[in-house]
Amino acid sequence: MPKKILLVDDEPEILEISRDYLKASAFDVITAGDGVQGLAAARREKPDLIVMDVMMPEMDGLELCKSIRRESNVPIIMLTARVEETDKLIGLEIGADDYITKPFSPRELVARVKVVLRRVGGDPAAEVIRVGGVSLDRTHFEVQIKKRVVTLTPTEFEIMATLMSQPGRIFSRHQLLNAAHGVAFESYERAIDSHIRNLRRKLEPDELIVTVHGVGYKFHAEPGRSEAI
Image (tube, rainbow, N blue to C red):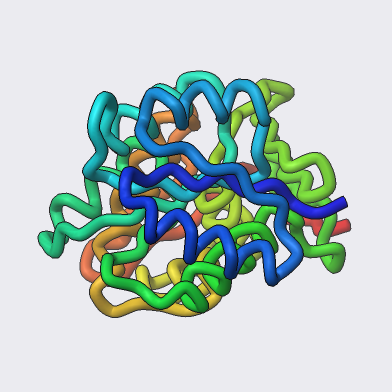
């Protein structure tokens, strides 16, 4: 069954071109012309991934992203004409998984959609990783801490999987972004801090991710060894 993509943008030309390229890549595509329509479509259609513009009438992309994150962890890619890094980081901090700056190539959009969906699909080489009282299950896209289920976005999940794969090892921002996105973007490195903040908030009160100042981050292993199944 083809993956269902929801496109939300108030520019008809972008909707049309993006829809055509995604359909040519065997995706099922739904479109919406503003944030209010997008939220209704997300609730009704239950897409596998949402691509949304930031600047839209009625409800902008940031509000739409926040509304969707209160209900779902569906992967979200944001389209933005804003060039300021802080604007892009805001989107990541409220739960977006990736962003693309306008103007963009429709081929780039298709490629980024495929990358994010591959992350959701998981890696069959290591279905379950366990470190102390924490388990990460790729098959069911689930993280549990002492039997408490923690719901993560696809990017947060992949960062967590990378850190847990080698407890105690320090990963640089560049390495974590490469693991999460399939390619590391130099201008994107500060984005990892936003994802880490979101992860820590969801993992509280457990302090599992340690900052190594000037170097990166590591997973704080509890007593016991890691195990991959």
